[in-house]
Amino acid sequence: MNNKFFPSNFLFIMTMVTGTLFSLSSSHWLTMWMGLELNLMGFLPLMNIKGKSMEAEASMKYFIIQSMSSSILIISSVIMYNINLSWYSMFNNNMISTMIVLSLILKLGGAPLHFWLPSITKQMSWSILFLMLTWQKLAPLLMLSLTNSNTFMILLFSISSTIMGSIMALNQTNIQLIMTYSSISHLGWMLSSISLNSSLTLIYFINYTIISIPLMSMLSLSKGNHLYMLTQKNKTNNMIIISLILSLGGLPPLLGFMSKLIILISLVQMKMMMLTLLLFLGTLISLYFYLNMSLMLMIKSYMLFNTNKISKNYNLIISLNILSSFIIYPLIIMFIK
Image (tube, rainbow, N blue to C red; front, side, top):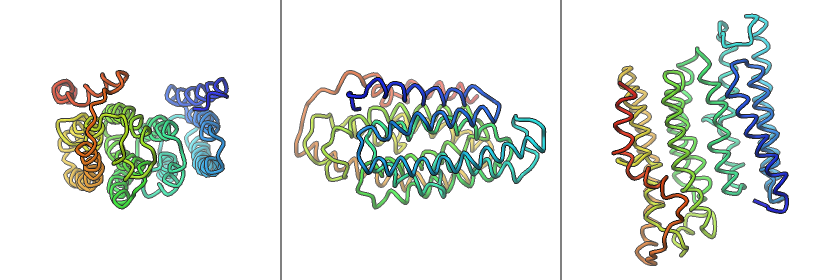
């Protein structure tokens, strides 16, 4: 971050966090909408933190998309209030609930309404990209869990996000775009359980954030944002980055596999076999580009073998990622049963 304007950066971060907490702590649709707008007002200046023209263009696109989805959301909420005389989750009208779900999926960047996300994220710094792919999804996900109808429609968005996010990442060379499409694919997994069991989605979201923090921090140390840059020499421990990338891919016994396992068990118990198979298909496609990234790092590890120590800040998170099968699996079984 640009330390020259640090006090204002702190103010914007606090505005963004307050807006999200506003939405999370309310069950009133008007207050949740106000929280989303406050969050947007805090996040937009952070996108322009380096003052580049490309960042200004990205923030303008983001503002237009978020304003459009917020407009649809507030209009739908007002119509819902006129029908039910209630600002709370009473979705008797199917068309209104469809409009609200569409506006929230557009906010999240779920496929096929994901068209705006990649063009914005490839121009961001890694810290802002991390906020975009994690924190900015929190409030809309909670609001989706409050929509008690249109489960089938949300599941369709879930399948399309998982498969499209995986396919679109296959021929990308920009690491930031790969992480963005990976995030869309993971969003599909979160959406698959959002209307069935929102606490499982929260566990998945927390696990995704735990993996993303050290991974994006380490990827930001590479000299550029293209895949071939991973073969350049730098001071990070490559095997740890490989374990985090494979964890995002969902290989056992890593943390990413554990979070997918929770959702798979619950979907199989609900007899949703077709949905489970399609989610599996999306994950298998995404494993190709995760393994491609891992291979590049592995070649680098062989050619330019370093024994640099990793920063102690992430030791706990990385231990949790690698030992999750022993720590988290028993907790998952207890939670589901």
